Figure 1 (cartoon, rainbow, N blue to C red):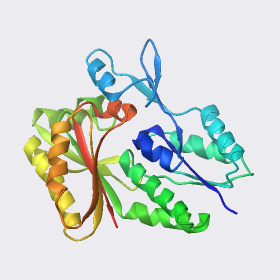
Figure 2 (cartoon, rainbow, N blue to C red):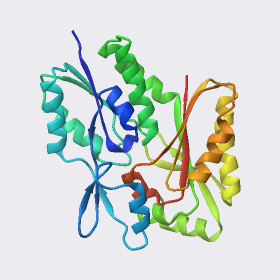
Figure 3 (cartoon, rainbow, N blue to C red):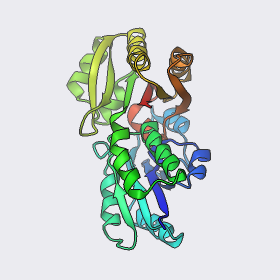
Figure 4 (cartoon, one colour):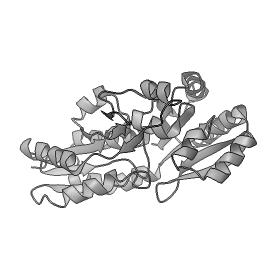
Length: 280
């Protein structure tokens, strides 16, 4: 009889209740300052990072091979026969490659490692869908064939009021970023086929950026039943407004509001707000 484990990393931003509900195993990324290393979601919060950004911008690192190896030993000890691993996009982090390296060393458990080409609660949507399918009694083969279809029905969009931290983190080009700041251009960003950030559009000013995000969401809701997750990095007012713009739509099947992980906050800075939709 199959027993299927779900494994991910700490940037999925799922609340503890959902991690516990599906017994999801989490490998945690690290946040590194000059004087200390922190573990994402354990001993540092996004708010603490934002408060220190004017003094030092930390670096981040993937879970180590040893830490991931310990997760695999844990699921094997719990008599899991199969594992489904969905981490942050390989276009943004080396975490997925570390998972693959470790998984290849274990013949006693059959593992499916999927490149989400996403981050944060977009990954979380995939994980909870997998958890629901396991609860429904679907087989490993059925679930792994369904995951790519789920990803095709999902998209993430975000904007930032300041490009400073995306520029410093190398997430966008310094020249285009500097010009954008000079002209007060706000990018609308999504994920490309390689799981990297790309600019969908650029608009003048924060109000236009907000309206553009709303329009992207309503375009989907007007034509499909959708789940939506709204996220932010230290801008709860903007996120609440975005949430309010969607919450009463008749095609909305569920909507939640949450915050980005500490690791994601390092790269985005404290002005990002976003939403992810999944067509039902």
